[in-house]
Image (cartoon, rainbow, N blue to C red):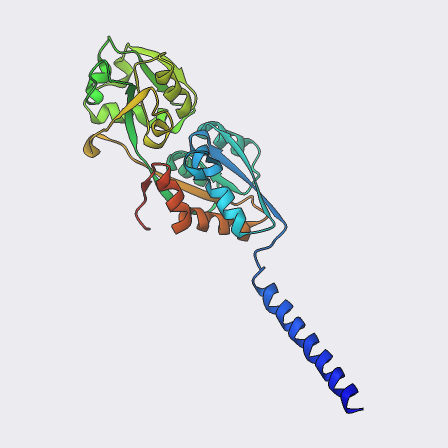
Length: 271
C-alpha cells in the first residue's frame, strides 16, 4: 500500500512540475501574436529594412525572429506617392518615408498616431569611379560639362531637398541647364551614375554606398548640407497599434539602429 501511495505522490509531483514549467514558458511567449502589419516604406530604405547579402539581415527579419507570429507586409515607393496613397485611402499600420517632411504632412492630415526617430539621412555627391570631372563640392555640379542626375521634387525625398542644398551653396537650382536625367526614387538616380547616363548626382549616403562599384562618394560640408531625420510613424488607421508600436520601438531602439548604421546611416540623436 505504501509503495502504491508513493507512486501516486510521484505522479502528482511530476504533474505539478510539468504544469508549472508550461505556465512559465508561456509567460515568455507573450509576443507570439497572430498579427499582420502593413507598412508603407520609402524605396531608398529597402536594404536596411529587407536586408541584403553583403550587409546581413534587415530590421524586419531581425524583429520577426524575436516576435513569433507577427508578419509585416511592406509596400515600397516614392515617399510623396505613398503619402498620396495614404491620403486617398487611409489604411495600414506604419508609414516610413525617406524624409520627416512627409511625416509632417501626414500629421496635418490626422494620419499619425505616434512617431519614432530611427536615424539620419545625410546627402552626398555621387560621382563616377575615378571622379573624372574632379568634383569637390556642390558648386562644381553647375558646370555645363557635367551631366547631372536629380530626383523628381514631387516624388522623392532627396528630390525635395536638392534645391535647398543648392541654395545653401549659393546657387539657384532652377537656373541649372545641365540636368541630363530625372528619376522618381533615390536608387534610380544612383543607377544613372553607375550606368554612365549621368556624371554626378546628389543622393543619400546609404544609397550611394549600395553602388560602390563604378562610383565614388564626395562628402558635403555639414554647414552646406541639409540632413533629414528618418522617422517612422504608427498610423491612426492601425487596428494593431500595440503591435505597430512594438516594431516602431524596435527599429528606433538599439537593435534597429545598429542595423541602420551597418547600412551607412548616421545615428540619430536621442529625443
